[in-house]
Length: 355
Image: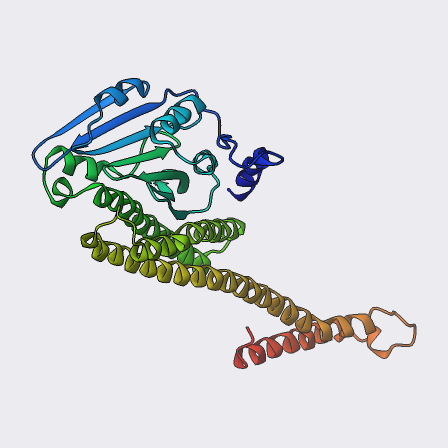
């Protein structure tokens, strides 16, 4: 995941600041432009292929949400710029999908960058997508890399004209989008927690080479989540302290709740990071203990055969005048002595609990 980001960021080297360059993967899927307009009594939803019809149908009396799935087409981004007069550096950050989550307050609008995660239970992989949010007086514009997000509950509330969102302004819509992304982090962390428990059982029962790979993968995902969630605390804090007219005073308690959620998420991530570190320590400890057990058995076996080998070595020299060589009962007596020594040492080791 990190290597892929580095490759993407190389596309921006030696370019003029403010140059719109898409740093993500090229896509062949058509760009989907969805426009939802609503107020406390009704709503309207349209899907466009370009922004021309949106410019004609947009109203200033209702709350407007323009969502763009797919940002690889620079023409669509330029059309948005012409309609809303966005700063070139903001356009650059929208197209730079490796951008760190952040919040910027302009006079006429606010710009927020977030990371949205989706968990695939079949492959146990977490996919990252950048979401950019522009908040205007009555408009919210969101940019996503591809189709599919965590905003369906918000769309349902708008379509049913229910809840607080239908009576609030664009600032509450922007908050709801951020809150939906943050709430989805809980689901991702819950899945990671279950995976940590599975790996923990595997470490104690039957640790293998794949166990190390699983622990390493979990550590990478936790680090990636930490890098994405940590800045949201600053984003929420910046929104709370902002005196912009785009944010009404009634939205501040919700933003404070969002801030509290980010603190809670960071606590969970820190505990998970400590758990994965301890899992690696436990794995190494178990492997070391198993190796010690093997060496212990081998040492006992070697110790058991040392006196037997010594006696066999002496009587294997075959000197001519060795008195026991000509004795009739020498061989069975020597075998009996060797067997007695072996059995005696075995029970001695058992008594000492070395075996």
